[in-house]
Every structure is written in C-alpha cells, then in structure tokens.
Length: 264
Image (cartoon, rainbow, N blue to C red; front, side, top):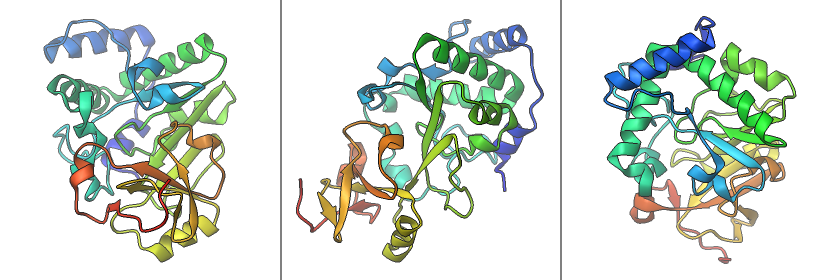
C-alpha cells in the first residue's frame, strides 16, 4: 500500500524538463530562496557520511516524518523513537537553513510531483554521465518507497550505472528487496530479537543503533556501518552497527542499544 506522498508521486504526469525548471525556480522564489534551480540531489562532497564512500554517492534529503507540515504526508510512516534521535537533528542538518531547504524540496514534490520527478531524473542521468558509476540514496532522512514510483522505477530496472540503496523501517513482507534497489532494514525499539533473527535468517541486512558499536551482539558479528555508507557492499545476511550520534547519544529508548558483548 502506498502512502499519500508516494501515491501523489506515482500518479504524477510527465512534465517537460524546461517547464519543471521554471516551476522549481518560481516555487523557490515563493519560499524566499534565490529564484534559481539549485540541484535536488546532494553531491558526494555535501554529506559527511556519503563522502566516505569510494563510489560517488548522491543523496536526496527530504523532510523526515511530518517535519514538512503537510497534512497526511508522513515520509517516515513507521517512525518511532528514532524521530527524537534522527540525524536530521544533528550538526549542519539541524540548522534552520537546512531544515527549510528540506521542507522546500518536500513541498515541491508534494505540490508539483511531475516537475519534481522530471528534475530528479535529469540529475540522476547527469550524475551517472559525470562519473564511472554512482550510488544514490533517495532517502537520506525519509523512508519513501521510490521503487513504487513508475517514473523512478524505469531507472531502477535499466542498467544505467546507478546503484540505488536505502535504509528502511518497512518490513520485508511489505517492502521486499528487489534487483536494482538495495535495502537495509532498520531495527527500531519495536523490533524484537526473534523478528530480527528471522530477518537475518531470510538473508536480510539489518541495521541497529548502538551506544558504542560492538564486534558482536548476542553472538552475531556486527559490521561497522560508520566506516562508509556503501551498504550494498556488505554481505547478506549481516547485522550492521551504527553509532548513536547527536541527540541519540543521550536517549534512554531501546532504539539505542547498550551492548554487553565485547566492544571493538
């Protein structure tokens, strides 16, 4: 089932690129930005985590959960305690200017879905042409099922030198892994150990947030997910450890695991 935000994108008509550019410039001006067509995608050097990857990695930073304030447009439908510890509230991403820019992109996607997708598709092609293969994380802070948007699915199904990947809180039964779009499950405070083990046994890759990343957790080897963001290079199955950052460092929720195994 699609969320309202996803359905809006899935039903979007094709819009000529020049019209999309004009819509984007005009919308930015309405929001008080400079009336230019800045890129939707963050380049490899624009995000500390993405810049650690060996392959040129681009990211799309939209408003997490209901940050954009759009009625019925929750971009993280399964968000729980992670809303308080979200990386969108950490470092430069927490600055008002960054938050406002995310809201502008998200509102544009909501109000002008066809134009938004036209710009996104062109940027994907330009980035792929610029590099010898790229990786793209369309959900830097959100959890949108992009593979269910026809105008994006076309690029997933065709080998264009683009590796799509994401973290998701959707369960494998609702959002299964697929060829061309690598998914890593994100465990939450609601994910019991039995469910997590079942995911691993079925070949899933699962990420957990730790106070300090251990070498093993409950006897399962942990891959250090902070060394790079190239999850698609990790084995399957795998338990991926992500170190708590920002507000998450002081959270008492079970979303952040305090491990008792040997630490690295």
